[in-house]
Image 1 (cartoon, helix red, strand yellow):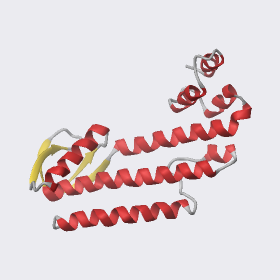
Image 2 (cartoon, one colour):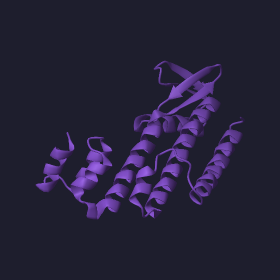
Image 3 (tube, rainbow, N blue to C red):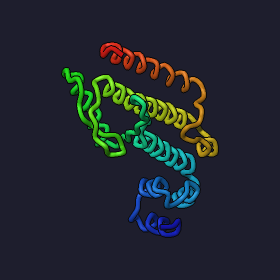
Length: 190
């Protein structure tokens, strides 16, 4: 698909403004193309909406990519697709209910038995990644929504250092989350 095709769909009312923004999110057109299609009267709103979609997608990608964790002498990788998040949550539920070990597999597909403490570490790593990415995303979204210059908005990138007070808010939230994760490992003896 290209800008002209998306523009034709928009001008013939087959595609809404939200649809044009989805085309940006899917990488079919650029934000600049969307501004041209939707009109310069909507530049700020278009750039803001496209940027919010972009950072949301980047957050999701970072979460789904998952994490590496050292277990014994092995480094294992766990992705965090919705299905895997559910599986890890269920695995941790076994530990919460008193289980001392349970079989599961890292991304290499080899099933092995993990101890309760290993399961807790996997769960904590997953929740830490999800919480940190979500807190960062929400702060970046608030920052983008505070901006009134489309060029500045267009320059915002997922992963950039947050300005104050957004950075402090994220640090505070992550400190609370870390404290709770430390309580979990403390209860499990490690």
